[in-house]
Image (cartoon, rainbow, N blue to C red; front, side, top):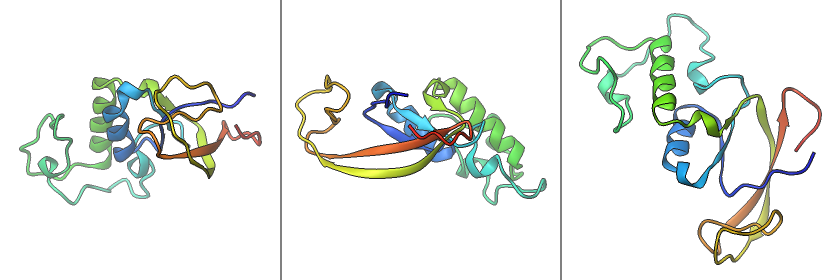
Length: 147
């Protein structure tokens, strides 16, 4: 399969990955998520009783408040997942996520000078000229093939 060329790659669709995708949406980032869903560590809680140890209002995106943000209860992991799903849907960032896509290697290619973002695959254009370029190897759907 031919390599995919993109200007921005985000690894993981957890809290930080979703926020980064939202902020960089105008650059059409690729978000590689190893699992079949968003949520990061909240998706894979070991204990069903896991709760946030902070109040809701202390654990929210500044532009997306919790529905019941003044509640003094500590949100359960399922409430956190619901909140993250609402955030992802509200800001339409799921379209950037490639599920079941595990990053298996990252390789530094070098600094490349670019004057715009119209380069062809292999030209490695960058968002900010003179910044580093990386190649990202990804396994999809638990395949042995790497892209």
